[in-house]
Length: 317
Image (cartoon, rainbow, N blue to C red):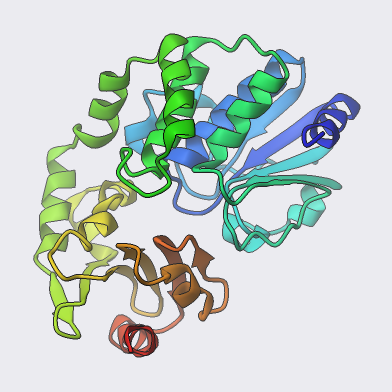
């Protein structure tokens, strides 16, 4: 059975460090919190650490206060990496030194199968879908706040149930989570409809950079990261802006770039015709899904954008 090795690893060990990728999103946060609850319910010692701080929009989730961006100094029996295609995306390195055993639970198609236990299903809408099935398979009577974490994770990784990974199976899971106590309208409001004034100011600056290329087939927006400190905003206040880049008519590929003077990170989006995951993979360390992917080019933004557009031009032919 798919879960046997995971259950065996949990039973055989006592201390666990849970982590996920840079730039935390709803799936990485919700999956971690749900798995944290399960391990804690089994009497395990659990620390939830990520390189980046928890975005404020997810602080309403149960147990979110235990998420830390301060790297633990101790060693653990197991490192559980969730929603992360390869260890480089953790952003903090040293994973081989912090635990001798690695659990890898993910749904990204470019996952490198780096774990001692690999639970990787690329047809899952979210990593939280896998965590849900794990809890149900183990007959865990998880409380409403865990259901809320799972629902938040699935809702965000399906783009509010807008993306093509929204199907009847995932909707049945969400119906079950609602039956278990999730207030769906509350979750939507907290994630998508609650912004600070500084967040809206930041988003307005991003909108002002809107640009189009290749006869309107490519749309881009950018965020010089220094603006965040200038406005007193948070990095997470820009989350979700990449999705807007494909809302214009005739656009096939969207680009959201966040950059410093020396490095440019690209979030890529597609309406479905072009596989942006393959585009991102042409940059070392890049990857993702066919409709949503990302990569980092270690160059100033003008040079990095020119390189990215050159790659995209080949795909548009």
